[in-house]
Image (cartoon, rainbow, N blue to C red; front, side):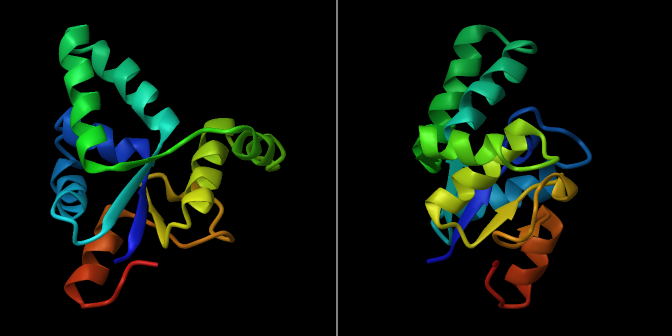
Length: 143
């Protein structure tokens, strides 16, 4: 089974039902939920998602979304080695660097994100939800 790392924006697309992005992100999410692929997220995605969602719904509802994600996706723990690698990645946003090295730590086959330019593709392929879905429909594996 292929392992795909899911960026926080994909989770937020689905949870917040972002009109322009929800359909494709939900299809990626569904593949993870049905175990067609193993979906992996960084530990920081959960608190970031909760922070954003809590601004729109009550805290209890935001926590339910976190529980839902925990039931579907594997979580890469944040540790010192990821932080040290992330802090030394030149020219990159620290949060995106943490995501990158969380994906590396998980041995993911690819990163699925809508912010492809925020991630170096020297560690693994970085693809959009649309690219993931194209690969899936053509019978190719992501990554």
